[in-house]
Image 1 (tube, rainbow over the protein chains, first blue to last red):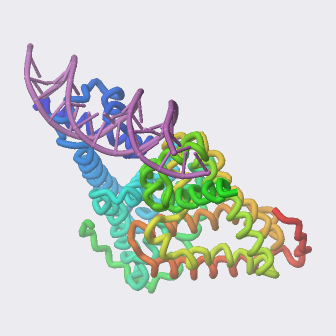
Image 2: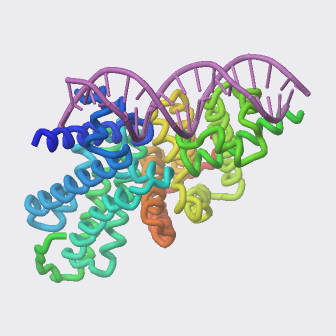
Length: 202
Length: 202
DNA sequence: GTCTATACCATGATAGAC
DNA sequence: GTCTATCATGGTATAGAC
């Protein structure tokens, strides 16, 4: 039973450090120092650093799914839910300013490394994409729901990248406002009344 | 004289590999193998790997400045020049799909490494930002020229990140069209006739 | 200027005591 | 399950011959 908690502990430490320093640039010694774990103990719980990364990605996938479910409960209307997505940029602005987007920076790094877990990391993007597409479809935008989802994802990615480079939180706030304006504009183009609410998860 | 060319050769090899594999994940042996240069020879031309990176960044800065000058010559009107910027996404779509944006991915990596050359790399972003701001100002949008410049930069960053993750060139094309549409919309809001053309470089 | 050989060190991973 | 060695590898950097 203690084993389970230590394993979880390692994954959470690694999760944070991989985000802050990047995967490759984080050594096992870094993770060990950030917790009370000896280097050798990693290999009781994981057989390689790659396996720790895989566990970190699984944790992030799980956390993301839970977050999306919370947004579904919190937002009656699809537009409210999409607003929840847009506002993570505000909620996490301090981290984003320092470390960028946890999804985007990880996917970019793993792509350059051509890492075995690249596809699983990209699945993080897919979760948001599918969920946003679903919300736009609920709004009656079936025809271009995926384009709208990708558009919003791309804008939030770009905001994260530049906010980090220029260390600028005001830029985040300004762009979030623009995205909200954009969303209301899109709401005007719904093909009237096709808004039957299908609450069937992702 | 031969020394100068070898140095340049190393920088160009490193430039390509840093883009494709990332800075940290590229070893001196990788660079050596990609050219006809021995590992030891690096240290005649550069005293460290960091110094090679610094030279690569200087090369990119120079190339970027030249590109902006070319766009200035090619485009009579500021809107034509901004279109040139937007269309690098198309011109480089094959590379972007595989390796992302050379500016964004480098800045993101160096930020995580907290690398000494981080600021110089960010200067690449600043070049585009300042240049775009200037074009929007020429269009009579002095009041929000910087916001518009940052907005466009952010969108192209987001497009690059997602195009790489999803390996999708069609997405690039679609988003480029959207950006063109956005630009024409912005042109409607120019504060009439304040378009005195000041061709005074960056 | 360029090469080979090698020192040196960080890091991922293993062995084995407790 | 956790620890303290220890090993093995690969990468940066240096020395010195040519």
